[in-house]
Structure formats: structure tokens, C-alpha cells
Image (cartoon, rainbow over all chains, first blue to last red):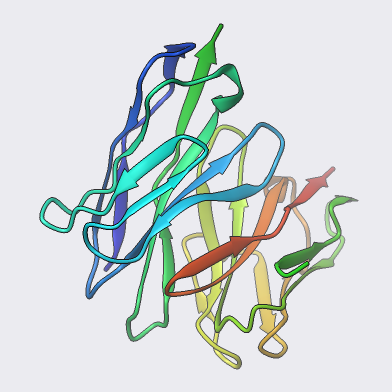
Length: 114
Length: 110
């Protein structure tokens, strides 16, 4: 079946540091890939997505490139801010016998210190 | 606004009481989900519905039932609430190229 593995946190950074959160996946067919963000006390928001190989999703300074050859979708941001402190979830959907099932990684907590 | 709507946002139950969490989406998605999220933890899938009329168990289905009433609505029922069901519950819907979440229901069972 489908699965998503992302690096465990917490990840603690100083403001303006470079952030990378690794995400790799296993899926049948041609999945679409997503990053969700959950700020403290809130629900999940879609941060960015990529629907085919070599696509780059980007939003709010975050980027992730769909790498089919390495089955990865790593999230990056060049200069983080305190307001980026949140939990980040990598996810995928793919067509299959059970419909377009959404599969999540375990989440990575990021803490940015001033 | 288009999206996933969950009700209620907050609920306190006594042990043994029952309740239904409601979820509706207006994006014409086939697939809908119920997740729970416990403090400091990721999302755990309770039930999943690939299309109207079908439901499947997820990782943690015990103590819950679901109904896919129509394409728009997917409800989650706790028949006899237990303190272990204290959690934040999220409903989601998706097609292959997009997936959206509701704002969550914070449930406390005392």
C-alpha cells in the first residue's frame, strides 16, 4: 500500500536559518504530493502541492519538488521566521481500487527561535 | 466559501454519552475521511469513504461508526463515549489533485 515517511522532529532553528524537512513516499501509480501546515491550536492548511514528476510546488517562501526517481518531496525554505513554527505534514493521494486515498506522514514539528 | 465544514467546533461529553460529528463538503469530492489527532501526535485515520455508499475502517475504528449520507456528507458517531476518545477530530475530502480539511472538533470526554 501507499506510505509516507518524513523526518521526525522536533526541528529547532534560529530565525533566518535554512529549513529542510525530508519526505519520501511509496505509492502505486502516479501520486499527487502535498505539504500541509498546522499552526498551534489550528487545523491543517494546504501549504503546497505537486501533481506530476518534476513539478515544483511553492507558497509563502516554501518549495518542494516532486522527484519521481528518488520518490521524494522534500520541503525547503531559505530563511525561516518565528511565525513558521508549526507542524508540517507530507501527504499523497493516488488513484487506486480504494479511490483516491489520502495518506499522511507522521508530521514534523518545527520550532523557530528569535 | 467552498470547503469542508465540521460541526460542532467544541464538545464536552460525559462518559457513556453518545454524539455525532457532522461533516459536509461542497467540492463534489468522492473521498472523505475522519481523523483524530492527540496532543503531540500525528493524524490517525478512523474511517474512510471512497464514494457515496462505501466506508472502510482506518487505523483506529474501535468505538466509532460512520455514515456516508450522500456525496456531500460524512458523519462520525460515538455510541458510548470514553475518556480515551478525548481528541481533536478532523474531517477531510479529496480527489487526486486536491485535498482539504475542516477546522476540527475539539472533543473532551469527562
